[in-house]
Amino acid sequence: AREIITEQGGKEKAICKIAESRLEGKDPIQEIGKIGQGKIIEWIRSDLELLGVEFDAWFSEKSLYHNKQYHRAMELLQGEGYVTKRDNAIWFESSALGEDKDNVLVRSDGSPTYFASDIAYHYNKFIERKFDTVIDIWGADHQGHVPRMKAVIKALGKDPEQLKVIICQLVTLRRGEEIIRVSKRSGDIITLREVVEEVGADACRFFFLSRSADSQQQ
Image 1 (cartoon, one colour):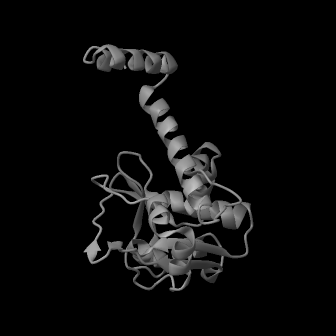
Image 2: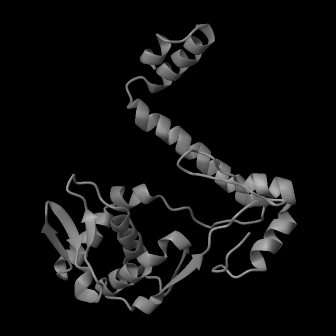
């Protein structure tokens, strides 16, 4: 905040002073991240409410690490002989379970991969909460991850068929004949709220429910 204050004018200085007072003694990046995260979750909840969609529980990936579920999952897999260390990284021995190649769990810089978080999340559901069946809904760009996730379930001592994965195709938006271009990387996005406000909640619900999840949607 101090760096910003030196570069801005009166109103900007006032805003930055308020921000600085709130962040005093704290890691500014983490604190601003928390504010942004809370706001985005609030937006997602309210957008889903427009379609009458509610979730009984919202799960934080961060909790897997704070509550040591990630560590317990890794210890279980290591005890079963499915975790090895090589090339300064930690690997899941997927090949021992029929996969073509092994998968990295922890990178050489010590940071866990998304796959490691997925393992901890399914450990939480199958082992700690003792679910009989878990149904995941994934985007089509993650379809190739299904076999390795099934391998993890087997490594955890469960039947891989207890994990059901529904693959959803991505949606192409059109306005008339024009395709609406979007890009997460550049920040060009269309939110669910924008779609509902333009076509209506009933039309939106009918559109999605009238097609199977794995069909191309426009």
